[in-house]
Length: 160
Image (tube, rainbow, N blue to C red; front, top):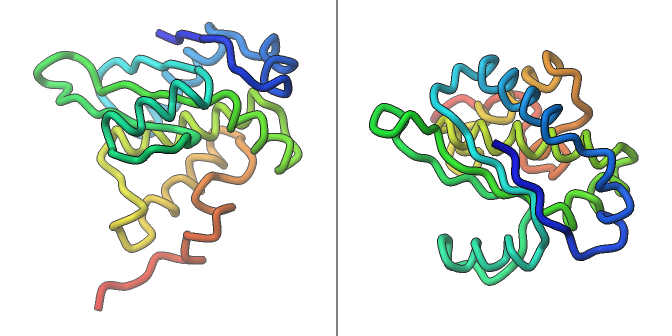
């Protein structure tokens, strides 16, 4: 299920009508299938302030971020987990990278879904970045979160 709460930035508010909950739900289901992620996913699209509160409560980081992932063992609940996306941050990133809020939200959802599937670009050797890149091509999305942050290696590094 996709829940959309009003963002706080005028930029995000101006683009809010381009987001269709049913279209985003279809995207999440296509992306889940492409990833091989079992279980339902709940999505909250909200403001920087709400994401900041979640980030502080669950990760101890007192700042907003673009996407948060909260995995749940699917075998126990039928759920893969929850995602929270800041529409305020997404709107800024969309403008910065020259694409729509809709595309940016989809990029963030894909990134979050990979985290729900157990991927972690902060600890792996580039595997998540490579998988995100391939899935972006498959799902026809612009540049991905890891790739444009500059934290992804051009190709996966070999373990030493």
